[in-house]
Length: 202
Ligand SMILES: Nc1ncnc2c1ncn2[C@@H]1O[C@H](COP(=O)(O)OP(=O)(O)O)[C@@H](O)[C@H]1O
Ligand SMILES: Nc1ccn([C@@H]2O[C@H](COP(=O)(O)O)[C@@H](O)[C@H]2O)c(=O)n1
Image 1 (spheres, rainbow, N blue to C red):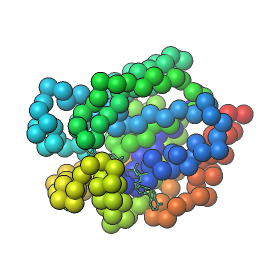
Image 2 (image 1 turned 60 degrees about the vertical axis):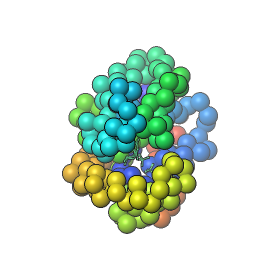
Image 3 (image 1 turned 45 degrees about the horizontal axis):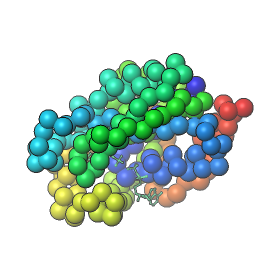
């Protein structure tokens, strides 16, 4: 199994790049794990308390569970990937049965901040987009798809998102084997990663 980690700040285009990579690859050969599925279970907190959580700090992630799941997948065993709700700020009761594949892609803002998780990646990719571009994308996406408003996104940006990005996320760029510039759609970089994966798939 080849495990590829794809990190980068919010709105840089990780999910989009992953979808572009797997598009045109044989179905059933590549699996996806999203870091968002591994936000800590916050069922013990009220909605009001959950809203105030710093979701951009490494401590917001259940890296133990993510590590256990990646180990199981490497052993050829299926896992029950949690399903996350951005409107509830919590895991749902659902899980997604995720089977091991020849290539597993793990994507998320904080996945390279944890040394044990980082070590599990055979290839580490960092997607870069400038912070103004990321903020614009995030505003549009969170308002259109994640039930947020302008005030919420800007407030979160100033209080946690930007400081956590500078402190924890951007520094993980130094661990990357490949950095994908993504201010514009980057089909060349996507093709290169797809070629590497195709090689592995034989
Ligand atoms: N290169 C790009 N140029 C313009 N918009 C993009 C680009 N890549 C992604 N987007 C858009 O930006 C938003 C955030 O992208 P997404 O892939 O969800 O980022 P991430 O997973 O890194 O947070 C989405 O609405 C997506 O369609
Ligand atoms: N309840 C939550 C949990 C996380 N976020 C934000 O999601 C961002 C990470 O996801 P991307 O798809 O953008 O990589 C992160 O910046 C958190 O602030 C949230 O808004 N609400």
